Image (cartoon, rainbow, N blue to C red; front, side, top):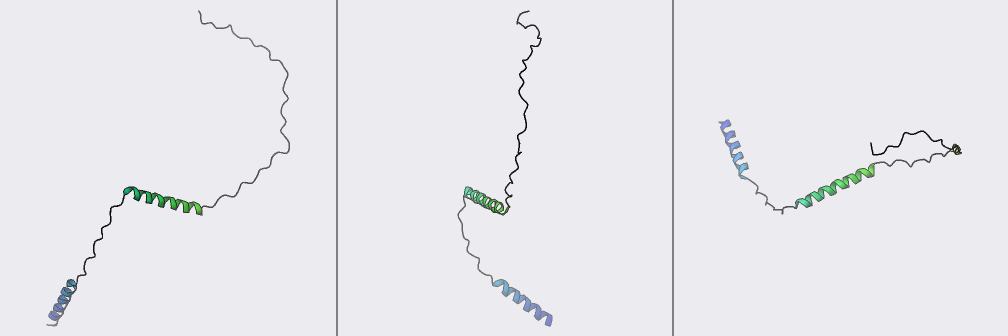
Length: 96
């Protein structure tokens, strides 16, 4: 008999709890967004993120100047020798 009363009590409690349904929230209609505006927002977000990353990247130290040689490298003196003619073959003409 006790089991039957507990069963009826649990069943009644379940019916009462399922009957207490909260009202559905009102559906808010949002206008359709322009696809170009969405793409622009995504590009701006990516650009801002890249800027943040670049700001965190350390810059290399400035280059140190290198030493220049103290004396110039000597160059060869120009020669005054006259070139000698070299033998060539007979001139080629367009006729056989």
